[in-house]
Image 1 (cartoon, rainbow, N blue to C red):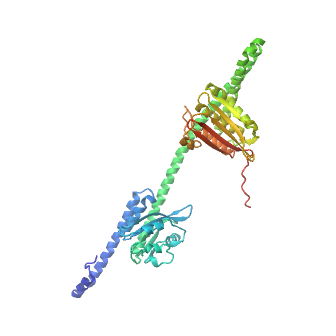
Image 2: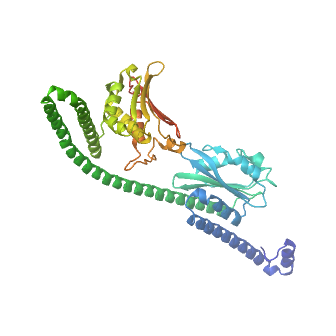
Image 3: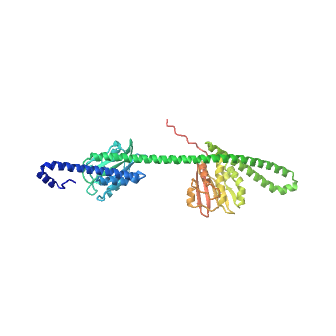
Length: 470
């Protein structure tokens, strides 16, 4: 404010005291300049404070706009950010003075996007330089001019500046005022400095976030290294401990065969049931132990950084399910559960990895055994899809069923097992096996009504070959 508030007062003073008149005008100009400098410093201070208290630019956006707008007499400010995926400027946040009804203008801008070089803010993006326009309503290329004219008494003065660090631009900030406002070079330069400061803030936060991700990744890798070391020790021990089990089962089989051979004919007929049962039990021990050894071998390979590829060969699904039932029939019988098959003999031979499919169906049937009450059934049913290019195998039980929430997490690492020492990864393993065969899996279940898993597998596995782009 000048020493004399009214021009008439200043002229009267100059007329009466001509010696001092020029100095008063100089003093007024100096005071105006000092006040402008004070406002610029205050704006910079407020922006610095907001950045220090914020984690992201989105969080700081409105407070930054308000700090600049209030101290430098702007009426409306908007923050736009560059989307690195679409390479477009999109709306982030806004601020406006209470004296301005900017609802229509803000609503019209909220859903807009700008290409590099498009519109005023797109031009700021392209040039990387701050821009000041005294009356934006008369400027070609301002696509929002019709809406801006309806904001209170209209929007006229405009300033836009880039948010950047070096050559990397993160966004653009623009301000409007309701009066024609000539270029203020000091303010324009200050805006550019603020844009760089905000860009440094974004860059620093991104670096901190990347550092945090790297630290988390290193911690996870260290944890997995410990797990791999333990798994390596466990797999080695399991393999060693299984060897005498398999050898013992073979010796037991020979011993029993010799014992049964020495029985008299009447006693052989009496012991026939025991002979058949012991033979089945020994085969279960042998087959199960060999399967475990195979899986332990895969585990040991994965610890070494190796992974056995899916090995496709002619596969009879009836034989796969028979092998699964051969191991699980006795545990199922102990619980009073009947294992059944349906239409498996009608299925064509498919190209598949028999070992991995065995693991998948073993998981499904074994899981079902713990869910089915005594007297219930588990049925594996086969069907050929229309066209004959795929088959579907359904594992159906008469168990307790599952809630919708459990079904949604079944094929993910979020699946939780409620069995003692269970990992909950059984269905995730099944999903991975089906995916490796180019098939798909679905589940149907209702509480108290049982559960059905449907696995659809192609008859012929087709390896995807990239197109020849010449």
